[in-house]
Length: 343
Length: 276
Image (cartoon, rainbow over the protein chains, first blue to last red):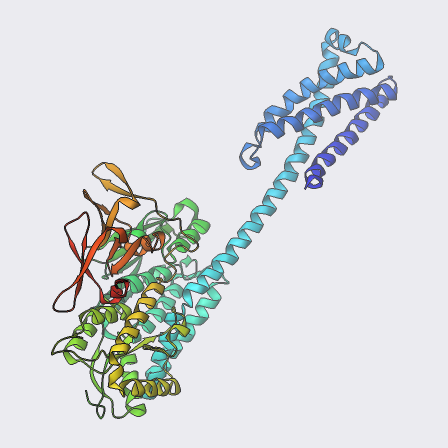
């Protein structure tokens, strides 16, 4: 671990040394002073500035993502004080009186200071860009990990064994009883499985596709639940091409069935609808089931794939998306999602 | 009733699957007469009590009352003493997915079937059922075994992924809202917990509190040596129980040291009480 923490520090030190040497050589080429003297001055001043910047950022910047702007204040202060300190150090080493001369000739002092400020800026830019690169890499890795996790969870919820085996059990009897409807059911199952597997890989599909997949799922459930399940899907044609994260509504419809209608002896209705209002798209899942589960609707409540919907909305739309749970007028639950339409 | 025409009741909420089971049973066990097919747990209990079949096929996941709850309720209300006493039906649970370790069912009083049903597996179950229905002398033992297994199954019944995983902190104080205040009640002051609709009543010697945490979530956080479950909805601190009485109908009740209420004891939990 110490080798890792020393690594960037050592790099910065080497950079400072290189920069100092360059400045000393440049100065020697311009004025008549001795190269060695320039070297000593340049390194004393450069290393003082560098040390102060490193110390200040160590103490004052703990969160680079939000506090990097503090460098704008740190660098000039460190440059001025580092310049004065470095001059005193060099004076002491070479037994000269440059510091007094500086005070006596403010114009020359300003010129040298400007050059130091420039060097400081170069150094800061280098540090910052390295930091930003590392942070970006970290962010990208985190996003990748999150995507993989949510893909797995989506698969897990969609391929819930209870749903799968019950569907297969229904198919098994339908094959003997009514081969035609067995085929229809199998087709829905195939589309449903294909959608589930590909949704975990693509990041977007159209609202039409979303509603088609909901239809597959609801048709499957309707075979299983018989007359206990009625459903309506309402998608205005002008919204069919809107893009949404794939199977975004699926967990909500599943909640309606699983927690609202399946446990209710007499069953009920699920209605899924989409409408545009100005620049906002409203998607609604309404059921006449058992009603609002307080644990589910609580803010941050992570019941049953709901947290996953929240997360996906946040990833794609940030704070522009909202999700709301309210009790329906006639019992049951209304879940609505709102986010900006694409023009 | 008689072995020549054994009767069965099917409780399954998916109509096609109920139909499938009926058809399969007809081929595998032609003598069996299906006396009723119901779609929810409450109807299953009602019909079973009315029709008193020999065999029950209960789907585990059903609306209203799960198959397990229905079986428990039925065991509670089944006449085992007196003139109406009947042998408790052989239970077969049907499930699409085994949340419960399948081994828990093997070679026991209660059988299980996995959906989709497979004829060979159903055949095995039928053989077992025929055997179970043959020696009537064992019926009392069968009932005890059934109760024991229901108890074990209820203990395992974890709702799908709803509960947080991992070890839970033991509960030390119960925090209950009373008006604007939150009252802290040490667990050892609680005489009993009782499930009441959407709340749980917490009763101490002096007063009563209401909390929203369901019994199911409290249970794993309480010491089973200290708090005994005596009914589906009742947890009693064992040292608070004064005595247990059996009434004429064979039902058991307990009385408490520091509260006047008499609490009914479920048949499932009467095994807790026996003289040393």
